[in-house]
Figure (tube, rainbow, N blue to C red):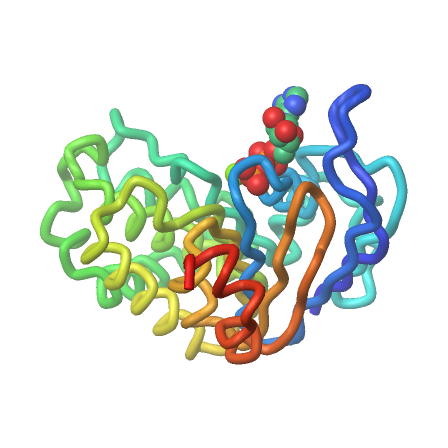
Length: 234
Ligand SMILES: Nc1ncnc2c1ncn2[C@@H]1O[C@H](COP(=O)(O)OP(=O)(O)O)[C@@H](O)[C@H]1O
Ligand SMILES: [Mg+2]
């Protein structure tokens, strides 16, 4: 689905990503885990077209993605839920969902996709005329996912979906992500919450200061002794 090949990137003199290579197959759930400042958000912004690279290539379904503008990448099926969710709190829940369907291609399916989002998240339908800012953190993350699904994405990218959520809500959130994955879309999760992110993933990559230091099946990574020592203190 997407192949990231030897990407280097940074901000001015600050180098953030070093020869980063990874791939996501069709229908796969891949988690990229790493601590704060590792470069996770930068990578997602590069895939969405919001940050440039200094070298490397990005191939999505045989398309050279680096040549395409952000809007085109969204049209091609790349949905990005940003860190902090990007919900517009002064608009209603339903208005936020409608904003997800901005591309011409999916606007024709707006009603169908909204029905689907409400089936997935009944709480959003119950509150559809309320301001999105009145939702809890977990509900706002549901809304962010629902809005992304309005785009009919082929690749859904989530930037730290668990950030700021209570532990019990985090579990719900990852259960929802696992549910969404069953529809067959490819999903890229970036997270500091290594255990949760890997527990719903097929494969994972560990990012440390812009370098991928480990990769493997999610099961392998969860059993890896270095990871258990570094991230879980066991
Ligand atoms: N807009 C920016 N300008 C300058 N430096 C940035 C910018 N965004 C991020 N950085 C720096 O790039 C590095 C990686 O950041 P980021 O991709 O946000 O990491 P993560 O998402 O893994 O926490 C950090 O050192 C951060 O301070
Ligand atoms: Mg980040």
